[in-house]
Every structure is written in structure tokens, then in C-alpha cells.
Length: 56
Image (cartoon, rainbow, N blue to C red):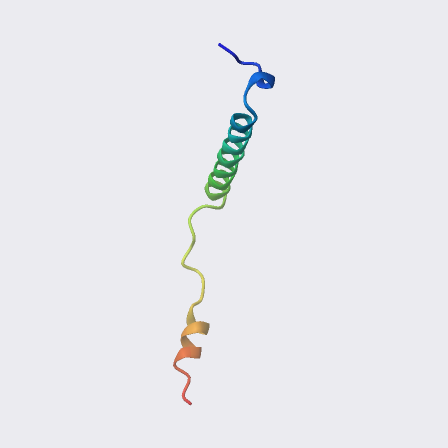
């Protein structure tokens, strides 16, 4: 079994590196989501609502 990265075809090495990068990115987004928590309902939507129903 060949495990030496120098003996791998160049395309496979690029694919493995790209897959690792995508996996790392997804893990980072997941950890960020766990740290920040779910969005809260404390945002005020009255600003956008008042702009829509402004008497004209």
C-alpha cells in the first residue's frame, strides 16, 4: 500500500487537500455556531415594519 504523498498522483493530492480544507471550514463554522448560540428574538423589527406602512 502506497502512503507516500510523493507517489500519489497530483490530482489526488489536490483533492485530499481541498477536502481537508472544506472539512476544516465546516468544523470552524460549527464551532462558531456553538459558541454564539441560537439567534435571539431581541432584535427590533419595528424599523423595517414602520418603513413599509408609512403613510404617503
